[in-house]
Length: 124
Image (tube, rainbow, N blue to C red; front, side):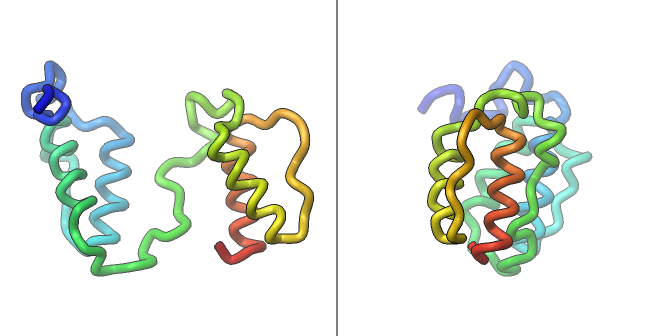
């Protein structure tokens, strides 16, 4: 077991949870139909709670399906090149939608938006 498996022992484990942790906790809590107050836990406890919720059965399926955890326009890496996973997902969905996959370079934000558009068209 490494230190990564022990969030309570992290040097920053006692700090307030990050915005991403809070958003993910809220998303998981909604899906699992559980009350979670991220304002009253620290970063280490938030990590442990995320793991716990991820392993629970979903009691409220579809509650957050399709909703992004964070607005892609605010990503600090949004201008970075789209990941291979994003490109592959776009190619598959574009084919299912009867479209040609976009050509040329695409950033992560643009790719995320294209995925959302194609999800609507394909029902995926």
